Length: 256
Image 1 (cartoon, rainbow, N blue to C red):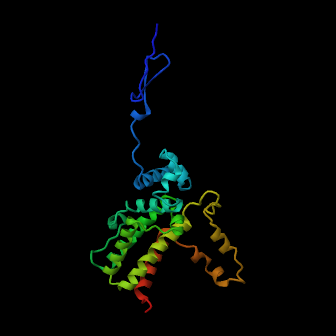
Image 2 (image 1 turned 90 degrees about the vertical axis):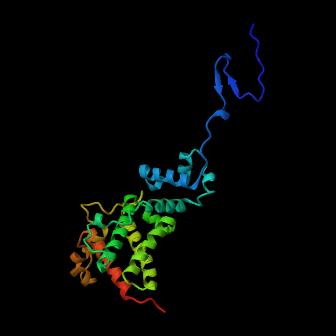
Image 3 (image 1 turned 180 degrees about the vertical axis):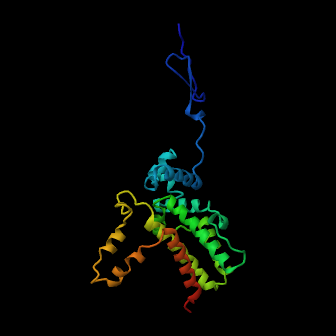
């Protein structure tokens, strides 16, 4: 005759109906690692890479971390801050010395050298923005100023000072350059879900169609120079814009 044994509450072993096979208690399972801001950002980057930025919501990240959204708010205030933290983390992967990569053939210490190095830095930063469509749009809403982004700003400021630009102009100018790159990436990055993709129709953008369809009687200068307005590959235009901004910064004294 089978006699059931009574187990105390201190024995963390549960038995099946036939009392022959032990089942491990939940108390004996490995504990999940402690939640942290670093872990949240790392998991968000994985989601952005595999599913896109629009899927990287607080709820989706919490699901990936096997926790509730409320747990994330201890470390991140909202989705906008989460996306800004992701961009800052990706900015940390930038190579600060990229003259060789960009093909700059300059001698250290020359005027052209510091300009080329700023171009290389900002080009690398723009590549991060273009690689993750939507991040630039988020950056315009909540400008990321994490440790990696501040180091990038410090590097740009240092190069402008090295080039002889006065500190007050360099301070405002470095901020202007960062804004310019971010806005350019936001304008030209892939459309967000639900947006109209105006890059279709053989590459004829909505802007190009609007300019070419403009009435010469109303906008004679645009009509006369529409080819010049639309000319040039994006890389050449971006390089020219950066140099034009730098020249303007160097020539424009800050107001008293």
